[in-house]
Length: 402
Image (cartoon, rainbow, N blue to C red; front, side):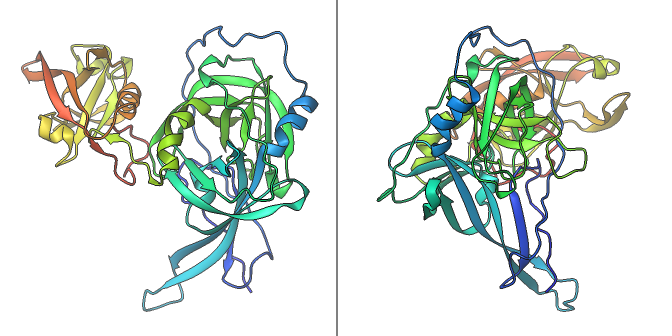
């Protein structure tokens, strides 16, 4: 039977091992799929995480490995068969494997959304061959997070301590524990290589403040913990940079644990978490737009406003004229420039998206803008916008949305 390699819908490229085959013929051949992502520059971190002591790698492993689960998802994906002249869909079944973090004694696991995406069954395994079926309780595709729950009866659970990712500093030693290539509870070591990176979530939205590490992370590490020298979880290992090979090239990315902590209570209540949404696309005002003679050297230039959204109802305007800049290619100009949200300065389109992410659907915000009035003149205005709920996906994953 022909084995068909699983093609992940994760736009940013996760590190989950996935195998997809014709239903009833699983396990013959495996192939990993890892896609490449780009990283943004990192500002100087604080000195809050400087430390002169901590656990050795062995001590961290003994302490935390029992709290790392091996997550196996049975996945069903529909696709149109190239051999079917009637355009009917084929249903293919396969498995995806990753990792998970035990966060309490009640049978709750934190993992990546892309580990359980499209899953019809999820199994979690622990030390000594203990394996149980788990239910997907909550999903957050925009932050690549998911909560699983299982019955803890008969199991001795080892919840991991969740640390504070805001105190992390470049150069800090880190440990990663996961199940790369189905090799259960593997330890790798390294340092924090950079901060404030950005990666793309499964639904195309941007995840900010990501931790970069050189601790080897491979397919199957997805959802596992990145630990500091004290054995505390500071990140959730999620994606890797790749040169076209299947394995690590020394650049991995972890979602900050503070991002997860802000969503856990909501995820535990069930359903899919969908954050606040303003409803526009924008580009950062910087030196690359100098030829446009804009009135400010910072902010988010609005290119497009989605009809019916909070941005549209507030009267925010997108660009109407397309032009080309030396660095950014085609740009829709003439739209409003957002320079502040609620009195807070907005320096970039990424910062705008981050500020909106911190809000809730239904919140009303003030939006400070610079608006073109003609003949090179601009006026400052403040508009009121009520935030809606983020859609399931974004059309252009390369353009920050708010």
